[in-house]
Image (tube, rainbow, N blue to C red):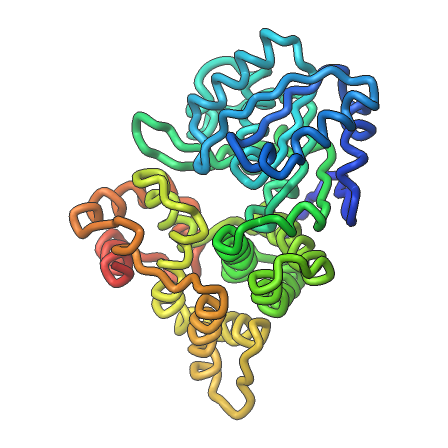
Length: 384
């Protein structure tokens, strides 16, 4: 019996050069813009100054909040809200990769909803948000296409997502030209994050026919084009495919949800400020080894989507090829890494396993094979 819901209310504006529409788009929603961005990259590339020019040309005022970390903090969101209120901003523009976009979502939400945003992350309901426009500069998180903002509490080290219908952006601009200046290490890490979104959404207990079709297409696009842009960041045609796959990955993550890889990675980057995509790379092979016999048909499909030939193999042998396919892709983008290389030690494992079950229970329970505490700890140990 088919039984599912799918909602995608974001106006996606996709194409080369579409960043020039920033002023026109923001003008639909307000008169003074809080630009939320990272500390360096949009300044180094000149993108921030291009965007402020577009806003000025549209007759908009703006203020820049450029304090966002690679794993954005709840305290940073609070600081951004204070600036937005002091400056009487009425629209939020997130400019950058997943971190600035998630921080922008948190600021837009907290502007309207009183109290610590952590209360809402852990279940308190909200009521509205400032209008939100996003311009993504990386192809990894899919935040431009979902209702999720991942934030870390610096006191508890809990890294968890706020999920609220109020933080769907009104509009998102996806301009592949912005991605041609990304350093190769960031291309690899963010691209693998996008792949994990599709893989996890496909394995999810909440997957449905629409998310399955999109997820498989996303995997194939990333497998074919991510190594190309990693080797040649100026290949704009390949970037179009990776950028679109990233947005599609955000869409399926939003509807089907994350599973074990994100459930186990968030404690890593919450505790140690690890680059999210690198943490996923260290975990995913072992997680797929743990999983494939419990979801053979789907893991077979993943193997095929990632380019493996499974003809003549049993379904179990074909499913095992999903592990091989992921290993090959990681090698092609120089992202084969261990948790030890990411500064994780065996003494961290108890905290990580307990935190995963405490803060990411929804994602872990969404996996086709649900591990207990000892199994989670064993997977972490295997990845050291």
